[in-house]
Image (cartoon, rainbow, N blue to C red; front, side, top):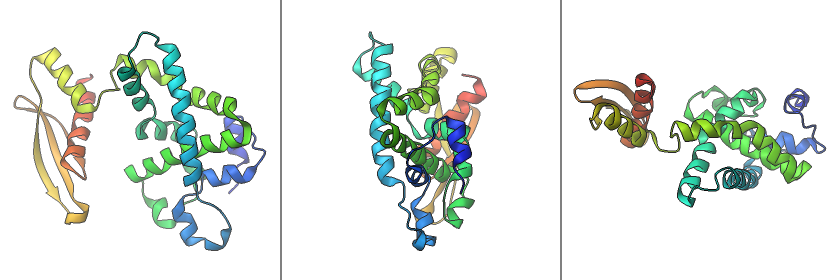
Length: 228
């Protein structure tokens, strides 16, 4: 895999190219390429997660001096959750550089989003080791801080069910309900389908590996359907 084009894209040529390669190396790749001599990215992810949290915490602390700790914690969680940082990873084209097993490379669902989010954190860890905190912080700022206004204005720091309930009560005076519509699959890999309702109207349908996950998915889609 040639990582030079990626370095050009992010504007940070690495001194230690091995660090960059490691950031993109998933554990599954090593299972099929034992002789590669590579290391998987989980240690870098561990480091990058801490750097990411510090950078975002400092930014929010300075941007919102009047906000209490609880709200700042919620804002931070929304900025660095799997969806947010996997979106950032996809915009950088990180998917094209991932070193995965054949099985993992075929997965395009939530599992891939988690892999990309972890790789994004590993990349931060690699940048920190290669070029220091200031560079890593600037990279994080460029990729994530612009999302802050939307997170606050659209209350994305709340989970989807809480946001949908709040909006439905505010705009319609009704508390949403959820109904299990279907469930399938073996016990170890159950799939649930849930409908989000306002009164008798089904607004959206969501799915997940638990009822709670399906309800959150349905609520998120209902927010989109209502334009909330």
